[in-house]
Image 1 (tube, rainbow over the protein chains, first blue to last red):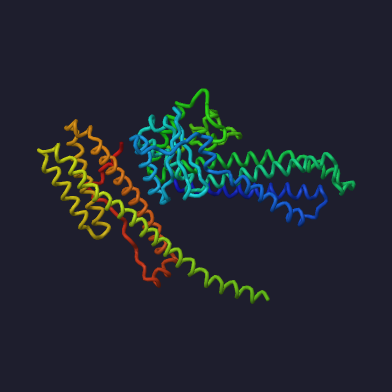
Image 2 (tube, each protein chain N blue to C red):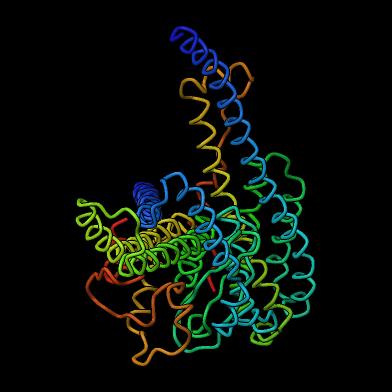
Length: 293
Length: 183
């Protein structure tokens, strides 16, 4: 059942966010401990600072994504692009959301992405390749997938988690340095074990948070697939679009790495097997899940 | 001490639960109304497009008076429809009539090459698709609303508020297969 898919993926997201917070708290406390701060002080200083860091990544704007993708607004004079705009509007009605801006990226690859932290300022962008090579139902499936990213506020979630991952990496770096330079004041006998532990933690926390982020990213893709199918009531449309995308994946991916994780299929990764380092689940598995709905 | 806290909690629950269900019912009801207004806007838009379509086709289809009359008639009954269900039924009649018209238009190559006609055709199927998605949303909202007011304790709250189950928008049986026009 589609609803069950959606519920499972939502739960996974909550778990991921909690894990992220635990990791962030962990590195903050560890650093405070090494510097000899009492725990409450690390919290008072550490949290606002990490929050600031996350906010700084948050301001990363819609415009910069569109620039990186070299996207332009869809041209209503061109029938193909006009029909794309129509489909975006139809999917917005299905989702009960404000109509996103339709953008087009001139590229022969089949791909699409959504961006915008709020539904009110959302953008759905499709490549000209997608408009040419996908039929009506397939294009609808792709737009439905993107519309669910907007409805689920995935862009916001991704931006914030990327910020947290960055903050954890930064704090761990400081932690590691202060450990190695031995600036700690609490050096008793038992401190030796703790220091070794802290070093391990400082090395593992950034790695782990990055993996957790990637896990979440893959979950959100499954969620968007299921949710998009709920909008169109036609999982086959998206499944067949993903099949076309798979057959069409470029041998020499061009374009911006910044936009890559946003696309409906990551053009830089055509791995067949599930990898813990990928932003997207394998296309085969996504198609299989869509067809079993 | 414990007694006071417990009493406080119970009072809080007694106040909070009805408020929660009251708001939930209102929220669901608003969603239905909002979905309906979406449909309504599109129905109006469709009705507005028809005269243009008839105008642009008339010159070409001199021998297909009946096809055009059917479209005009369906539009008139759409404009007269009052309840949501009547509206949807009339809209389906219109969709059927338009389908015939577009099928007949296939025999007129010069008409098919007419930009204005092509644009109207695109926009009419666009509004048709939007209506079917809005209807889907309407029915989903009705389902959520009905579930909320039929299960306990929403049921009690709905009784106090005088709310009754809503009907889903059904398309007439014979028209059920009418496909969404795809490009």
